[in-house]
Image (cartoon, rainbow, N blue to C red; front, side, top):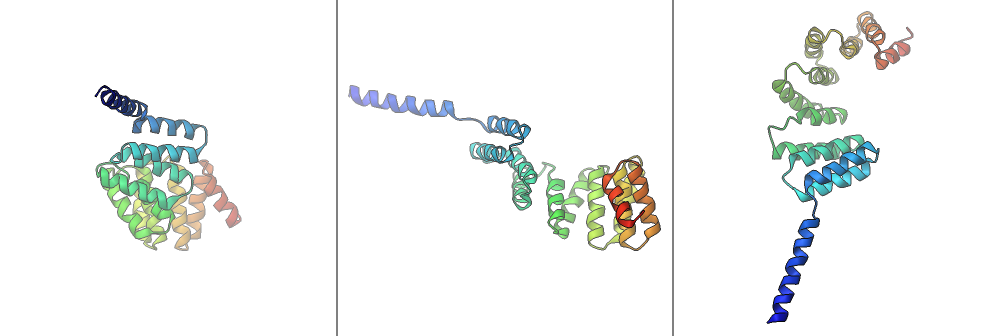
Length: 203
């Protein structure tokens, strides 16, 4: 009987030590943050996965792994992580992140759905309006692209990116004069992509 009691106590203490040594999702994410700061995204991803294992219902953990996957160029995996985070917490504003990745992957219809949700949540966010304008541009829906970017220009007239995006739209519809004017303005404001577009045009 005494041996049985001692055996039970040993098992109990062992279990308690395991629990005490277990790390929370927050602790794993802190480690992931340190790894990101050190530039080790592969290690950061491992820590994020540990966080998910520690707390499978954590939208925050999936979001962080999605961000790390973005940094690693693993866009499809990032989309899956953002999707899971949105499922776990529909109010977690991640549609813009997923929409941007879908845009880069060429999945314009799905990307547009996400950006529509994002703009409904925040109608004044520049990155949302600019991204949706570019999605419309890629889809050949130029009137809608111009409407979005003109609205962005009204709200953010001092941001170079809006003139660069409008320049791309004008270039795509064959209005070279307006495209060059916008590229020049954006380049003068410090937009390197606009400067590169000017060089390609020979200006």
